[in-house]
Image (tube, rainbow, N blue to C red):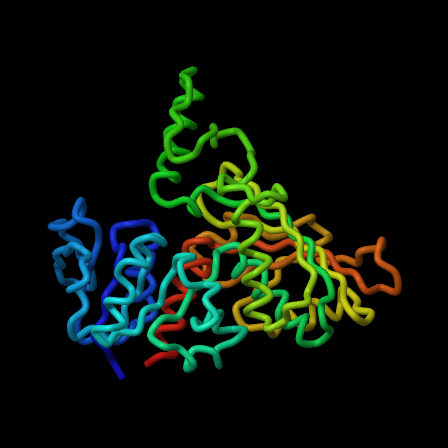
Length: 333
């Protein structure tokens, strides 16, 4: 089965990754419309041996479109996704605009694919940090319920888009040349530096990224009572986020049991070589579909062997964004 497809935000980092993944997975479509802001309208993009002209994203862009992949930012999603639905398209939206709407499924295909068919025209793609963190936690949670998660993220520049990645590259050159780094995409120097995630803080001092991870995990797991706390940090890496995850389970569980469960889990690969101190790194995950897991060890501070520590790495632009959306689109077909 094939479809008439639109990609909104095609010139951005996730939009470009959409195209790579659509080609790599040989996604079946009859027609493809590439959409972006007025600034990018008229640009030419070569895709699968054919030249496409980028069109301006408007409310009239979706006539005869079956599936629209959106990565144009939350405000544009709010503005244009309802028009796409009204025109008959199903929107898979990569922004935060609809994630916590009770009428919109929030989907990771390895976890809750059954939610896809409940859509009313819009399906939300979770936040990148949420996806990368909970794809490997889900098979463990199914086997032995997780009571509490403590997550610390180490997030790449790619999470803030193409301009942030270019800024990291430019700042590195500037600093090595003895110049003052130029800061535009981020409020602080990214190169050779680490800082708290640059999203807005709430009254309790948690940033929006941390709040997203808590709320989205509870919705995807359909587990409103799971205790979760997060600390989200930016690091000077181009793409692929890492996360340190501490889990407290209802029942005892051993590192070997965790490895066995994860060894057959969809979308997960193990790099857990204690002998050589070799565990997942951003360079392992970059350009890859799976979430890589290692440093699997007992948390000795939690009694009765109910605690486990994990370290994960995942490509933020692929499984953390574009790949997850394309997987949803494949299931729609």
